Structures are given as structure tokens and as C-alpha cells.
Image (tube, rainbow, N blue to C red):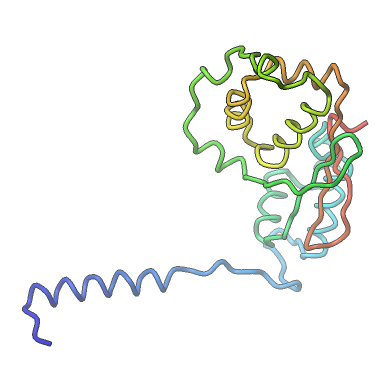
Length: 201
């Protein structure tokens, strides 16, 4: 098929863009026998990762933990990302079933636009629309929060707005009904262990 010079240039440009997409770098999965520049093997990094979340998790004592292990939290995060561990997080509400958390890294959350403060207004009309002010209702809302919005409370506030419950009422009822959540983790599909958390007692 005959094409003129302009069409040929457009065709070559389009093909070069396509080839560029195909040549995008593939994420490198480091082997089990690889060693980081700071001297961490995959096995040592895995031991540190599990020990950290068992002993500190989302609670206090991080500074002392890394000082005791002669490293820093910055280096720890760098090593974990370098080995690209398959980390899965789970939650359990009121000793119920274990559910998977749809985890979103905090760096991705921070990139999002801030929602309007309108979503945090007091709107308690859900109870006037047939919803019962029961523990079961708020256990379900806690499950929704942790399953999809663990690292992203602003989007969860939007969920509360849609069911006409203010965040103040939500936190008040969670405290009133003594709803507790426990958190768990598995690394590379290994043993599931509990993460130390402020709410875990």
C-alpha cells in the first residue's frame, strides 16, 4: 500500500511509541541468595520483618527496636522494598472471621486530593431511616473501614456520609459497644501471625 512521507513519519512515530511501551523495565525480583549493600540477606530481612511486627507493629518502641538491631527504620523500609516480600494483612473484629485488608500504601494515599470537609458534618439521620442503632451495624462499618480504607480514612468518611452517620457518632458507638479489632500478617504466604497494635489487648 502506497503512503506519502507524512503518513510514513506518523507511522514510524506510532511504532516507536509502541516499542517504547514494550521495553518498559520489568520489576526485578531479587533471589533468596541476594544480599543488600547493607548486608541483609533475604532470610535475615524476613526475620527482622516478622520480629518487628510482632514486637512493635503499629504501637510504640520503634526507635528502641531498631537501635537494638543496629539499623534504622529508613534502612528497614528500603530492605523490605528491595526484596519485594509478598505481604498480606488481615483483620479480625470482635474475634470473628479473618478478612483480608485491601492495603493501599500511604504514599499512594497522600497523592490523592483532599475531600471536602462536608463529608465530616454531623448527619445522624440513618437511625431515622430504619437503621437500628445496634452493635451489629457498627461491626459491619468497622469491617468496611478495615477491609478497604485502612490507610485511607478520608474515603471511609465518604462512606459514612452516604449512610448518613457522622464520624463522631461512628467513633462514639465503636467505643460504646467496645468493638475491638486485631490485625494479622503473612509474608510470602507463610504463617499468619498477629501484629502488635494499639487496640490489641
